[in-house]
Image 1 (cartoon, helix red, strand yellow):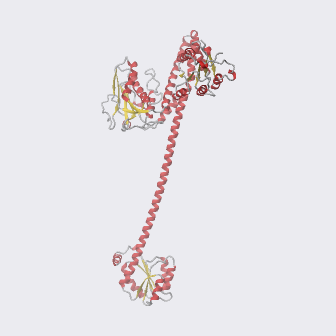
Image 2 (cartoon, chains in turn green, brown):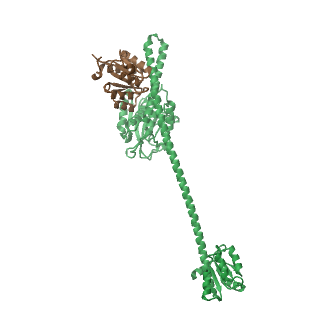
Image 3 (cartoon, one colour):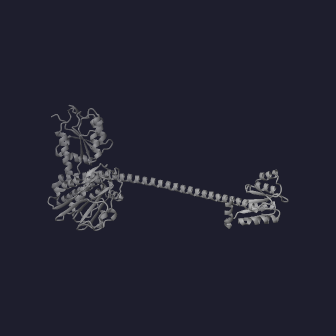
Length: 470
Length: 150
């Protein structure tokens, strides 16, 4: 206790934090004496010479302790104490009675009953007075500190609650956004399926009238052959040819929409024998040609075998087609090793620029990058983005036959396997076509529904073309 | 040879009917074909109802059934044929404009005897239809039980 008093004594609170001590005595010399004793506490001493004056002070500020003289004219200490206790604000302010007389036990008991916390008898020891008051000052400081802390705690709690509330709100918002996104994805998928169904039924329904045009042109020809002059015969041929062309386009569209409608039959697909099979199927078309093949080694992938065969048939078929002007065609089918990939000009590649976006050449272990490279007529990289569109062609039909569905089909199939497609080329030098397919070791699951494209290529584009071209 | 040579063609599209008949004319079978224009009429013919009540009792040697028809489609007609004791053995050939895996499976599950996609080119169409007519109308022996002698 002494220690604490000393501590208070030596280290008074800063001026702004001084506590108030009320000294009440009708005799000024008593007040002066007490003031002298208590001054070293460094607190704010408020003096009052009557109970009335004391009550006035009590209205304005809070006191750590009141030293109240019992014997006073007009209103004595007990009466004053009673009024102090009666007030809500001061009902707990500690009161020390200071008295010379009235040491009888009933008197003392009365004082305690009125809420005195202590008695001090005159003549008092200055040290004891100082020590007692110091205790109350200390108590007051502690209580104030406690109040501050608990209000800080309450503040912190409120802030925490606010933060939790905000976090909950954010979470709710996130959930809402997620739900929206999910719904949008579903809508998009439904729209895609609608579009596919539409493309299918349109191309299906187009076939009947086209068959009739062709059929009746044929009947007309056999019916009126001898009556038609050369010009009329030529017109007939043009009609027949055009109908055939349109029939081809419709067939392609049907093929294309079938890929979207078909359920994937996922198995382990051995790429190398499949490539050999595709190559063998092309053999009859290339008996007159000189082609240097470089195939593999190729790993196994996971996917729909018949669809992957279509991918390879289209890519390899294109390589064969577009190397036709070459005396010796070189066609290479291989895989790009996983990270780290070839740097810009490395890898000993002899044809094609290597300015494909770096992001497209980086790929995770779960997929295999397959490429088909040729030394054919190549293409201008400026048109690379058009290559995979439906009915998009970079060559005229008289140069190279075809409708322009092949690469669109390739992209569609690869996307349905969760992969990406891209190409590099240079006019006159050759082209390389890439696609990614799920690897056997990692990617055992392939999206089985409609596309969930991991590569970030635009479906919308393909669909837009499908709709526009139909 | 007491073979029934009648064929029933169920086809709603008049142009297709004409082309089929032209193709069958190449093999002199055009006169052997009865034509109905929707699924309901096909069943009326087969069950000898309404305006077909008076036709002879023999069943056709083959029914060439277009898949897409008004009122009752090819599959519904096929189901009715296979459910009828007097008709269930009659050969049925499905004719359609384009290949669709699901429709092929469904046709066979319902008891079709063949599934033929109408070729796009007229020459191919002509040959295919003529061949169908020759095979089902002349080469193939129809189920004896389905033929009632007049």
